[in-house]
Length: 393
Image (cartoon, rainbow, N blue to C red; front, top):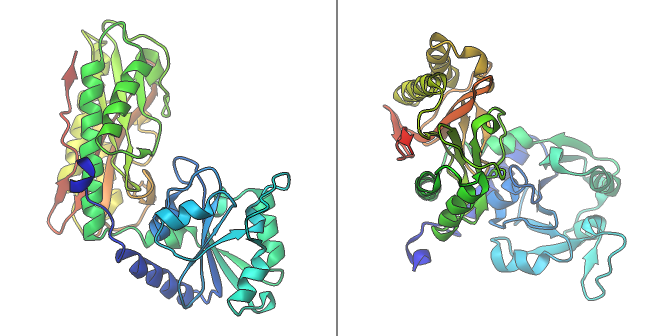
């Protein structure tokens, strides 16, 4: 029943994406481009999901594009059939450079990159300039094997350029992201309802994740964070067996992935009567969040919006705890480029989706995050998160 009414990215959107990448290749004089992906939860699947709609799992996948023609998926020997069944790229080849030397697949057609390129009419000596996205993800042995296959090629890091192609969202992407935020709202509400003294952080996280899965989440961009008391102090808190206590403050952060896209919401739940310092800090963070939200519009530099949030936090006396950039893009990565910190000169554009993420961490009293999503419009922004700011248990 759920699937009948859920938004998806339509098949016809993917050829337009391939064309945009090929336009970029021609502008950069690239003979070949590899968009690499793996199953590392935060950044790994992004390029392959955006270009081929395949959720990468277990083995690496790579979308290979030439300046003209259709893309090819290069896979390991256990992913080819899944990529054909699930993805939008019809030509899937098992790449020898992605195989494990100790594993045998006697019924698979496994080809080295040189053979695949030869089938396409290319000699490897004719490939002089190769672009690569996902370079930081590739392990050393795989990268060496790819470079050995193309011995005369210059390799060009295209990570930033490829990511920026995704910055402005299509109508279908906007609908999918709205659904991701609906799921995130459900996760927050469920987590709040599950919080009570004696309940462990992991029990609360399990309740939230179960609700988000039931609502259509395929996974999570980051691990669901339920962090209470001193566990909330670090930026990257993780849920533990610690039991929530009377007068705790409980940090919640959820980032469900739906059809490859994310919604991210952060809140603090006040149990009983927590330290007044924590309550004051949270009220300041909420004020900063709302200040930034009112300023969001196309044409403004993101750093100006972020600076306004920092000013609110500094005025409240908490500036030293604002430890990272407070505005970033959201899409097939939960925290992706463009990022709008103090050093950014990027300007917000219509139909970007931005997370305003107000942090306070590494304080003696603990830590907190107030995070919400927005779609940028000409005269303001659509608030994608609908969870209350204040929860008391």
